[in-house]
Image 1 (cartoon, one colour):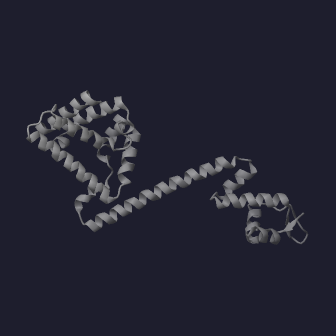
Image 2 (cartoon, helix red, strand yellow; image 1 turned 60 degrees about the vertical axis):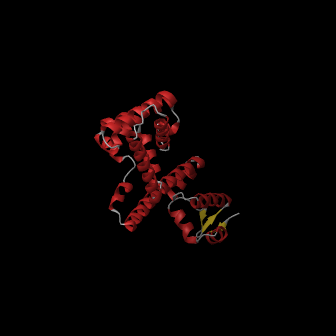
Image 3 (cartoon, rainbow, N blue to C red; image 1 turned 90 degrees about the vertical axis):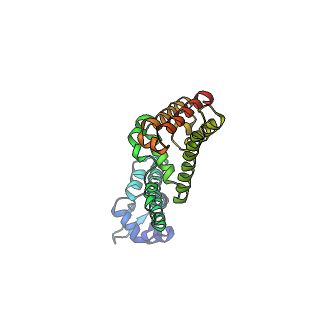
Length: 251
């Protein structure tokens, strides 16, 4: 059996112009062309058109569809590749949407200090984080940070400030690194670090977690910015020694 271009178009729910275009690009040529110039299609043409329309509906471009059909490429692989492209595009758009929302929230808050919240979670330490813990630790922690709303970021910053204030208060109260209160603070500190994806603590890697916690504890004393955050060399040393004691006892 054969069908004219108009009959096939009407049956498939497309226009004859679409079928002519498919013919022009070699995607769906007719089985024959009559002396009057009419295009005719057979059952194989109908089956091929059904596959074309299905793949088109799934978002594949015409050149990719042609390659799938003419070179007998695996349709599952082609669809899988297309899905990965769509997912990457969705991730890119989601990131842009989050950034725009953050910007609007920051403008509404009219708080210049919020610029820190708009930056990456560990951008200032990017090279060091990658060198010590790998690219995944950096990218996943940043993705986790940017996935938060501005309100969630501010809550996290507030919890961090509360933790730091608790450390300073414990040192002023004369707590020692081995005291129960200090060790409770250390456990709280470790839980705070464990919440960050991509880190050894988050992954539950014991040996690398100990190495990471030891490194961070030392940084509180050796990095002047961290030392200032904890109120100076003496309280920062107290924090370091307490965390190191915690690793010996509990990890």
